[in-house]
Image 1: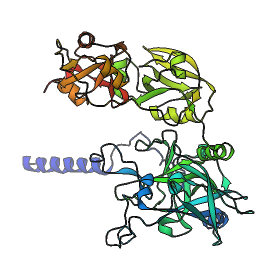
Image 2: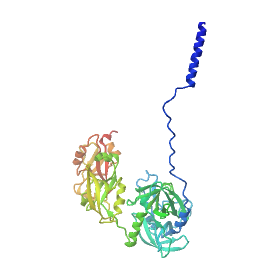
Image 3: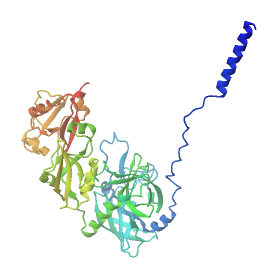
Image 4: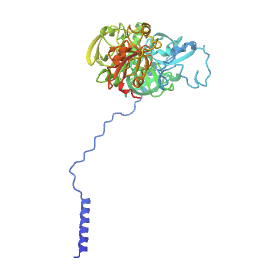
Length: 509
């Protein structure tokens, strides 16, 4: 056989072998895993609220408050958030004069009412007892000359305001009627994010409108209103002007909250609504009914939220808890030995995760109650018993006034670039400080201190736990802070006291 023929046979053989390898690959020993079992169904169908509305609807009422001249409207004005120019969305109370709808009385394009004419404020409420007691929001009836309650059967009654509480924004009304359909009261402590909830009210005067949604969060703090004793329920239920004071219901038809506020930059519903927990509201209404006023427990501390820089500056493992920025003179906290810089981590075993957790827990307790505080001080755990006093209605804040007077005394230099000035007796008296307490800030030359928010006119009370009462003392204590450490300055501004964390290493421009 010739050489070319041999080559041809070899080529055919090689091709056959290659074909065999492709057609019959070697067996794989690894077993293919079986398909994963399908995830269990966590949500099944949508609820039907018709039965709930039929049962609860008769207990929901319309509340109309008539206020005399427009000169009284300031009583119902919303509280503006600090720095509205930096916060485009703000909490707004319903019915504030800043909220105007096109085409509505007082709104753009509508006839203007005389300034001295009466005006009506419409809201909602609900019957809590067959003998005529009704709950609503305080801001619905605040400053009213007369209040009218309209029932679902169209009967109308003049209502007496038994009492109201500004801190919780709850008002208790009484109408002369009996045999009324009262709502059932639920347990707001059992609410969990994701649960269905329903609102019934009178948005824009449209009586008995029903909206539904879910609980978005619980225990929310409101930084823009003086309601630090209310752990709000956040929902995505559509709430608008006129829903205020109406009930928030669970799927059992029980009232779990009072619809009170919205988070909006337009004045209308934007998917974030807030309700007062019903346990808070019922406690307030019971006190208003029996004594005409609300008594809350008071610890006597000013607390602030901690961030990671604060925790690092205080040598703490994490930022959990409420940092004590100030202790009121003569308060239960001072008598118990609580100090500035302490971190409250628990009350009677209930964890304090953030500073806003503390006021509702303390405020819900009666004056004279003994509580056990778990605190951290210089990294050590302490148990401190405290007997609460009664919260006063109007604790006067120290008037910080203008920046301390007098020519600045130049600092000898410190890592933060703070130029201090000594305070005299008049300065300290005006600022509400103790003799020998505090150092004024004349200039802020370090970028890290500026970035932390320090500014001329601030008064430094402490560096860490060390009190400072002179420029020399300020420079001396700041000089002890290493370049890679965080300085914790206790600062007084406009009557408020808080810790400010500053890292000297961040001074580079």
